Amino acid sequence: MSDIEHTYRDIVNLIKDVEHIDSTEKFLQVCVERITDKNLKTNDKLYIIASAINMINEFIIAESRYSRSRMNDIHTLLSKVKITQDING
Image (tube, rainbow, N blue to C red; front, side, top):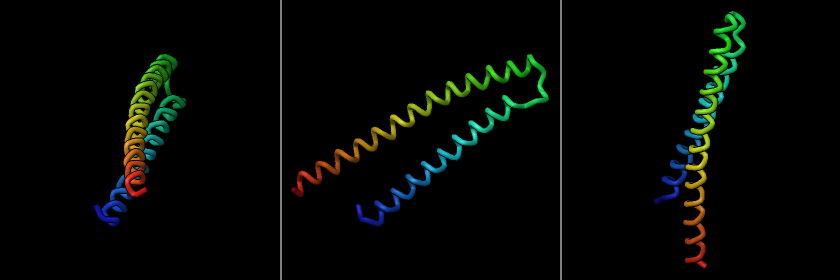
């Protein structure tokens, strides 16, 4: 793979990470907005809070899986770099 292809792939991965961070921010912002809505009655408010807690719980689990996947990718890349360094001595 050429340097240009590596650079392009790195840029695409960076853009994906930025989009992921932006969507994470938006998700958490929506949760906070729903919880802090002052126009809701008490029962509705409790329902929204419970729903938000469940959404955040699911989000944390999904985010952990995503992070683990990214870390595995990083470890794979680092092991390839080490193998290349060992070969090139």
